[in-house]
Length: 332
Ligand code: TYM
Image 1 (cartoon, rainbow, N blue to C red):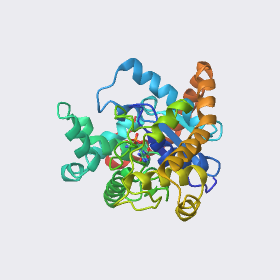
Image 2 (tube, protein in one colour):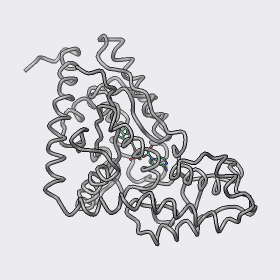
Image 3 (tube, helix red, strand yellow):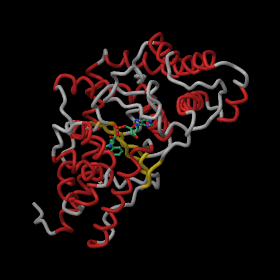
């Protein structure tokens, strides 16, 4: 047995990956993938909590797998899998939903936001979504969950559920911690910088996708909404547009916020926006090229997700068997 930490994280294939998913989560996934025992999943079961086009869902999930690999996650050293290929997720989710309170689920910000935006489809799955997410994490006894800041609340609830379960049955689940980056944890929409950049809302042109062409990325940054001042200064409350651009530039170049303010002192917004656009283009270029190359090799991608499902199932089933035994289900 080695004592490497276990990492688990997932992204919904509910739309093409954005610069937000990359800087908030994937960058850290790749960095952790060289050091820890990592499970990275494509959470297609979560995605159907909002209506998906079946052909598009399949396509988005496969593209997402190629993007995980293109971001630098080596499928031979890590476990990359599709959530619906590992039935233990659905099974543990049911059990955990019996240890999750209605009041807890009602307080989830993501539920409230999504329910407000999709008033015609507030389904039960959308409501119990956090129990499935808790199952994703607890099945692997994860220590760390690298996510953007919007997922912190779900991980806190996962811990509460685990503590409640352990309190009744003994130490069944490891308690996970969120791992949230200092810079890039909440990338905002370029056209509406008080809203989170989101893959399910790409209509306004404020969203940059990982597969966008360089000229489209440059255009999006040149048109980014800023403010009527002219100083390049980090001030989240009063200058959300410029602050978002500074964050993006920092995340792409590794420069600190102070260094960036000095670098652009006395310069205009136009120059700065173009520089941020170029930094993003150069960050995403190799990922885009590698994704397109991998997508041309479907049999390789299939071998990755088949192997990932086998590896993930082995770990997940161990936890599930333990849980079933603890709660009093007869072993088969
Ligand atoms: P999802 O699919 O909305 O987003 C995937 C990851 O990307 C991060 N992210 C962002 N980070 C910074 N700025 C943004 N604008 C931005 N947009 C997205 C998210 O924080 C997330 O880390 N419930 C999860 C998926 C999930 C999951 C899990 C995550 C299901 N099971 C288990 C971790 C562990 C979600 O909806 O993420």
